[in-house]
Amino acid sequence: MENLTKYNDKAELLKVLAHPVRLCIVKGLMDKECNVSHMQECLELPQSTVSQHLGILRSRGIIRGTRKGLEVTYSIANEEVKKIIDLLFD
Image (cartoon, rainbow, N blue to C red; front, side, top):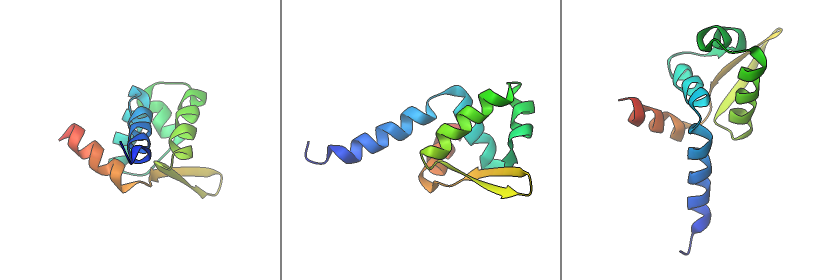
């Protein structure tokens, strides 16, 4: 295959989204921006676990964090991911 890089990038994106917690986080962010505390309550997971998954999503450019005082609010940064989530949950 001549352009395997393109396929590698898409496969990496899908691998990141394939974890149930990360998929749940991204799906939740489709509806509204959210902070870690709210996600922690919804997911019923420790804050450290949620933060770890947010770090992975942020490092891959899937989400972005916006600081508002002491709080960081997360939103989806990747339009392609929005399309994937729409297809999965439509």
